[in-house]
Length: 193
Image (cartoon, rainbow, N blue to C red; front, side, top):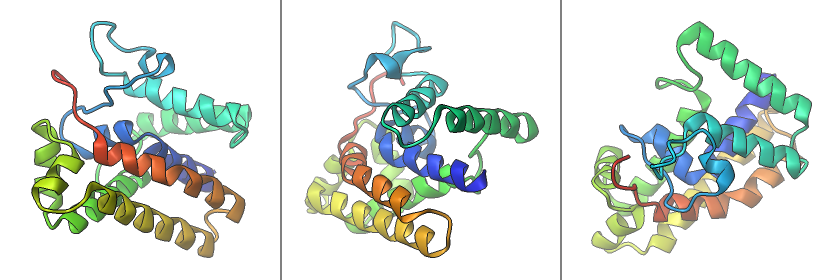
């Protein structure tokens, strides 16, 4: 079960770049481009999706494309509910698997740009994208995306070596990494979020 939860945490972080920024940044930050599934449970007057609805939407998509079964989705949701009941929320604090993945994305981007993670967070919080910050520091946004893809791929490969992921699951995760890196780099926080 822990492997499954860790895998879904990685998928959630990598497959939901905008959702990922919510957990990395001090205040809510979400994508400007939302699908109906992303906004279920959100304030209709806002472009900010409710995190639970976003997470459920990601899991529903994974069920639909065969990455996980409905039974696995139900088990993941129950595990997160149980974790919330026991410690105030899944992935909260510095030690949660989702937070570790997100910190890794931010660290890879910040290192490539030549800034600290705190500087990256502050820039995004002030309305800049990671791409804007990179450009301001003379770094091509595509190079930042490549650095994130390389870092994520290395982490996924290590998870396979450690027996935490199957190669099949790793291949599926790797297929999502470039798009997630692009969304992470080009994301701009909507006003009022």
